[in-house]
Image 1 (cartoon, rainbow, N blue to C red):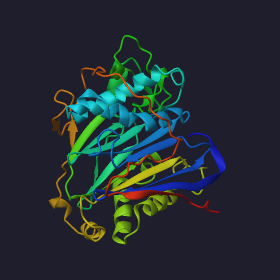
Image 2 (tube, rainbow, N blue to C red; image 1 turned 30 degrees about the vertical axis):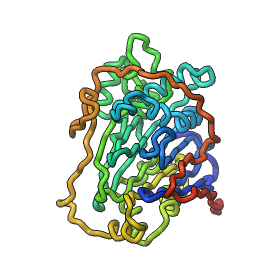
Image 3 (tube, rainbow, N blue to C red; image 1 turned 120 degrees about the horizontal axis):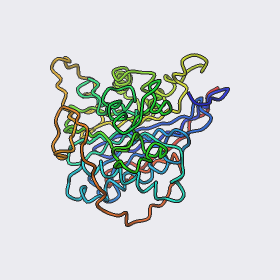
Image 4 (cartoon, helix red, strand yellow; image 1 turned 60 degrees about the vertical axis):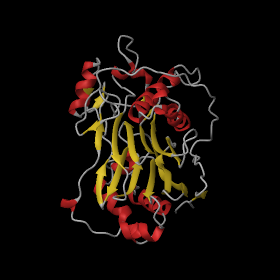
Length: 372
């Protein structure tokens, strides 16, 4: 556990936005940590593709520089990729993650940076949800009232991850990579990516993401995207039930996010350390053209769990536009296909980047009062 304060900082930065397809709320809180290292992005329309939405949480460690950088640049690396232009979205996400890592290691202002970040991204295009992940942040969907994870935590103790780490020349000790890092994949963390005989995706700690996909239908009620500060405290089922019961009471999504942060915050940090991390959560309501009244009716339905099928599939690199149900470790590194040809205007950290659409609501932000 990182260094902590004597008292938690409970001030929250919250935001909401929406259009006829989605209503989105988010909130983040520094909590007990001495600094805020999380970043996040939600875009109702991508800069070069107004028919695609993008949501992401970045949980930084060792500093906030890499998480903030990823929050500004990652979605641009994905959408500017040649594979994206060919509508090969899983490949575009894979390349986007690796391209961003390469961009950072060639950036004079960041290449010596020792920090890193998780990245959990949800890109929705052509009525398909694509989830890309490195690290232990997580995205969980609610499908007909049932929690169904979109991502797989990358922990060093996981059998597949441990095998990959040892094959790359590393080791796992005390459930940490080389006895140090508590997650096995990340953006940044360049101290673990210095083996010149290995391809970027084959380093001890890799930025190569797992990709899952799921058809977006009205069975998908909402998606929760959050850092491990939430998931360490509550299970997938608990978080989904927490959000769903409050949606049934017609609470606004950003208010639900704020209440979730307060619920996970520990009253002290003297025992397990759970609830003492930075916390960030995004709640995406999948309206899909429904009115709010129609949406509230959907989230109030009771469907037997036995009748709800899991539509989420893992994407393999062998056939990147086809998904199957078995995770396959990639055996070939994708190479960058296009140089970044635009300068990215930096935004202040923790400011939400939201593209308004013709049917969108104006973004609103608020900062909660610090609790006593």
